[in-house]
Image (tube, rainbow, N blue to C red; front, side):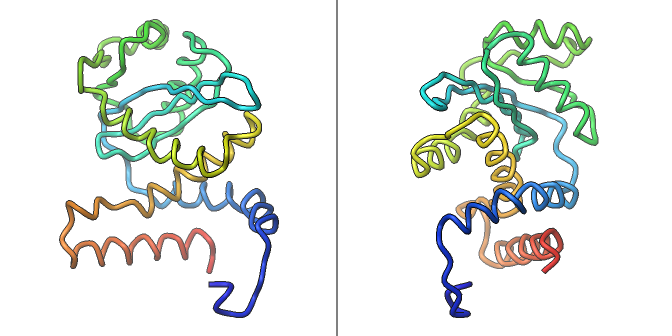
Length: 196
């Protein structure tokens, strides 16, 4: 869009704009989203940041929408507790089911919050929704040649999740007229969030 107007900017300028305005846009986009489904899927993945092993803890709903994510140094009960507390604080609704993999940190954290009654330990493919949500992050990680710091990864991934939730439509499952309507709604939400 900038090139069409004859404006030439460098990658560094875009990076600075993203760093400055990205979190604001992400917050506004989150406010415009409808409430998530009541079934949450939690999972963690390993990321290498500056040569150190870090864990990205993610929560998605039944439709694959990213609810929240947290970068942590450890893969323990405290890290799981941080994600779940953040989820409960930021979501408008309480979950009816929380699906996790076999990691023992999840039941321990849910027990501390008296949520064991909604815990559903995933077997085989039950937590594929969370596993598949890691794929766009892995693609971004390769394109950026890895993340440089924990704070920048958290900032980028939070912004990326909000934009991804707004614009992602399952094109292969959607008829063309419906896809056009969904696309128009996404661009309208983007215009409101960016005050364009």
